[in-house]
Amino acid sequence: MAKNKKLQIAFIGGGMIANAHMSNFHDDRRTEIRGLAELNKTALKNTGAEYGISHLTTDYKALLKDPEIDAIVVCTPPGLHCKIGIDVLRAGKHLIMEKPLTRTPAEARRLLKEARKHPQLLATGCSCRHARLQPKYPFIKKLIDSGKIGEVYFIHHRAVSRQGRPGIEYHPTAKWFLDREVAGGGPLYDWGVYDLSFHLGILDEPEFKKCEAFCINGLDKVPAGTKIFTVEEHGGALLVFKNGLKYYWERASNAHQDIPNQTSIYGTKGGLRFTYTSFGDVHEVEHFYVGNNGKGEAKKKVLKVNMSRHEKGDMHAVGQAMIKALQGKGPVPMPLELELKNLEILDAVYKAANW
Image 1 (cartoon, rainbow, N blue to C red):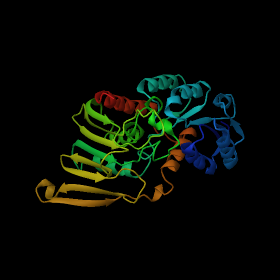
Image 2 (image 1 turned 120 degrees about the vertical axis):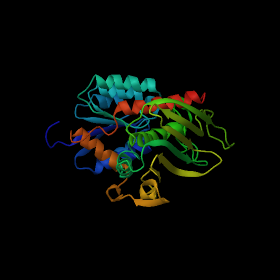
Image 3 (image 1 turned 30 degrees about the vertical axis):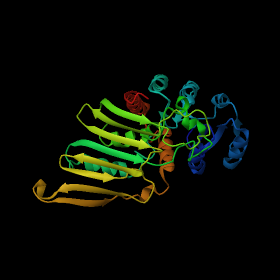
Image 4 (image 1 turned 90 degrees about the vertical axis):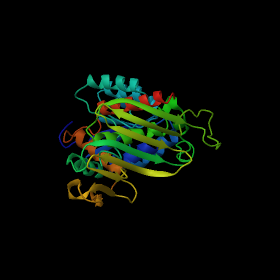
């Protein structure tokens, strides 16, 4: 890329998540949105006009032939990620793949194999959003690394909602969310990539060993609007890692409880309790410990996380990290190797649940 030339970005898929990315690239002086491939011609025209996109097409392969395009953001349903991602890399374009990286670990391995054939190209996933690119991540990691809570032996994470299913109550037109052959899975897959990205990252990526799990759907009789409803509504797992760490993890988009997103981390000297996501109003970390070097009374401190540098939100942080990486000024935000590792854990959970 020539010095001082704007990075030319293109998108494959022009739906809700693509528009969230586009606003960041459009507003940044270092980038220009040059191309969009979208099958819906009305959306293609309207989005193209909104962001001043010059190269509009219903055939994504036309973008691959455009020599001016530097990087492509893939925002299609996950069932298309592997094939399109490989095509993007073979065309010599940097790849930014929306989460989940692929529908299965086997597809992720195929994509990673192709990426390794093109070491000059950047290839990144997006499960760093809500996780590694916001202030809570380094704040909590620093607490753990300091030794203040001792050795971490157990994590408990739960996020359970009622009638918040993608494809039904949330984004109801996107019925593909309900088809495991397209989506890869339900809330365990949709949100699990964030959960694992955050919780395993702050613990320096422990090696997974085994798990026990459950999955279930059909928890009400609300019409789904489609005959295909093969993703779980509620799932959970007890993950066991080779270093002895155990992690009880539960996710539901529809269950008969309402439990806000909360993580508890238990260490031999203390514990932490927090909501890891950056949105909302709760930006505190509760630190539980025993005074007088463990010889005194049980105590608790409430620590405030400074979120001021994250005022523009998670999507903006992802965009900034990607631009820096494309300019060679920062690391790949979420390497494909880490994305694959987490997808392999998710796949083991589904297998353990016989799902």
